Image (cartoon, rainbow, N blue to C red):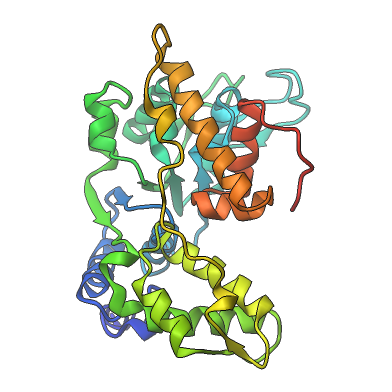
Length: 332
């Protein structure tokens, strides 16, 4: 089994970089999980590489010649979720002009990665549980169920067990998804990996622009080593890409990094629940403040704001539209 052996060796031989003991443990566990067909639930903060870990589990396993299909559950409007996951028949609803396969069918024989699974509404959790148990899906508008064979890998940055206790996530579905848990460590817990990650990311960024990789001034490296990276590896990549664009003479200086600001809790005032305010309005107000803060810090560049928040651009657009924050020009 050479593929499994190489993954558990040095970090340079795996897409999951780092020589820290925590990353060595992650790679070793992925090697074991890839041989199994049991559902895996990946936990960890945004930007820690949960989707990359899911892809590795798929690529090193017996299903690697079949599709790997990833879906962000928080980016799909609730009214379209059943159709997206299970497919639909022509004429089953307004706009259904042709039969469409769902993501379960697209992933047939392979792996379906349910990212941000905690965002699934309770009504969809019931249907997903049945599909996992029975291995059957029923497209919207269909009269017959279709057998499905996919491996389920899920992920979330939220505490799913706490959401079960709060009544926001079904306990039976939690046990079905969380057969084996893989936790991705935050970057601030493995600072010894930062230099290697910087070299790897700068090589990738420079390759994308077909230019040589720049060097890093010692002051810039020292600043990065001290920073806590609330957005983890994704934030480090965004910082380096910006610095790459700004640097001169092929050297990234401290000034090129911009201001490395730790979170200051600008939204703390919105945490207080107002008298008579229901839970939905309270959570929407907090989400709105967080989104506006990210947009202001990125000068309303939505791609940058999505990166700061650790969500996809599509998910950001959906959340902005839901909250009525849609008065700025779109950017790609």
